Structures are given as structure tokens and as C-alpha cells.
Length: 144
Image (cartoon, rainbow, N blue to C red):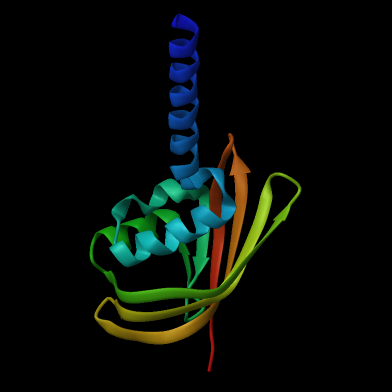
């Protein structure tokens, strides 16, 4: 009986550990890319947890913004995303520590009070640091 109980407890522990790992977006490059866009949509000021320390974003108008400024803008209400949908996403992984996610992002909202309503091609560069996937660069290219 003790053996059955021990096996059952081990199975539960293994399942719980797997569930925690699977839920962590930092363990999968596609998941961390999706978590970034969800954080933008949710206006989540903790977006910086998905970013490398040298993160930069090339915005719709060609401006380069660093991660600290992006987190402040998203968390402080300067960037308001009403709707944002990623489509045609494709992630390619290179070796074990680099990945690129490409696709399209249809977004409506505002940036510092200026209306934002466009579709952009996206390129998201992700790198693995200390066992976790993080985003190093995002580029938006407006589509006509």
C-alpha cells in the first residue's frame, strides 16, 4: 500500500511540476512572444519581465524606444491598446538560444493621445538568457 501511495504521490508531484513549467511563457519562444503582445493589450506595466536589459523596439513611425521607456509608457497609460490581434505568426528557432517570430499585428488604440489604427508586419527577436526566453528586439513595419 505504501508503494502505491508513493507512486501516486510521485505522479502528482511530476504532473504539478510539468503544469508549472508549461504555464511559464519564459520557457518557450513562441509563448514569450505571445505574452509580450498580451501584456501590451492588457497595458501590463510588468512587460519588462519579458525583455532583455538591452531591449529596443522600432515603432510604427521608425522611432527606437528602449525597454524601460516602453514599460513606463504601457504601465502609465501613454500607450493604450484597445484591440490587438497577432495573426500569421511563425516562430523559427536557431540552435538553442535564438528565435525569430514573424507575423502581423492588427492594433487599435492610442499613443500619447494620437489615434493608432493599423496593421503592421512584426519581427520579434528572442534570445535565451539564464535558461529563460526573453525578447531582445521588436520591429513594427506598417502595412498598406
